Length: 431
Image (tube, rainbow, N blue to C red):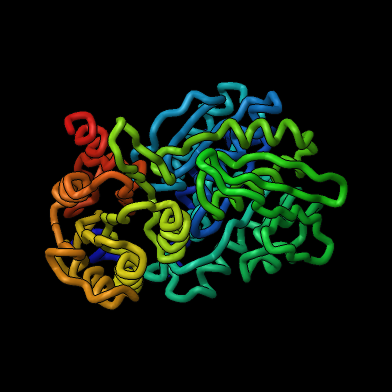
């Protein structure tokens, strides 16, 4: 157990809140409140934040703006992107404000950033005036920190309580309307099911065709109807694209300019990323690490599999333990071959986490799992990926989830170099 973990129960919540607030205020003062005069777009929700942010950045750049980007995956200024290797989405307030100052110095007019519930609770965004806020969805995650889904939701609602100029929400999420009930100059909702909301401009869409190049979408507003292609697979990525369109509508951009930006976003690192080195099977790497995200990835991939779906995954340590068997059960339901392995154990015993996930696999809604035949426990993650690649035959799909873009693994309080994407590339090149 780390010193931080052991000391936390001894510190009253009110004192910790004051500490976080003062630290964030000092950071904002130190860097001169760097977002003043810049339109800041804050994206929150359990899943979809990163891809929505990348779609949005592309839409704004297509309109000719200079754009700064702060996501789980990357930090960038006007298309010059470098990896975010901190394993944090909204980083600590001093690093956050330093990066915001760099974006301001580069002459950016807009900043697109993910905003996590942890960041909101710990005041990391102190001093940032959000022009636009967007809510993607609310699903099972971070209950180790927030304790209940209601507390998790209410923390995210605080971002919308800042009275942004534009407030946007996914109306297909059960909490969407709640986020649009807070004051803003403009309210926008997006939907794939035709949902409506009071005093809200609704962007409604339907998927007309699913092909190798992505999802063909027809989008409707009160004023127009347009057709375009979302070049990333999955229904959830259509929702992410609609969120970016709503941001564009809030900025009064022409629809064709927005479509150009959406269609230019052909990949996001570690998000449904296909790695192709000419092998006769597909390999997909994705960051999905919550039950809802993993379910959506499985539902997007499974119908496209001609052979077998081979899944490699696990669960993180030092986080919500209740989701571990759920993640395993999803693999047990959807995968033809399930390989359970290590995944950022942190300060916990990796085998305890693996056991919890493996128990879930055995309860999956599939024919009986036979260890050594259609179910494997491989504690070393590299060995698990090697086994999946070696097992794959023509028309199979190898799906590796949990780490996505990440280049390090959290082990025993340290960050050890590790990249699913790099390992897959090396294995396929030498295959």
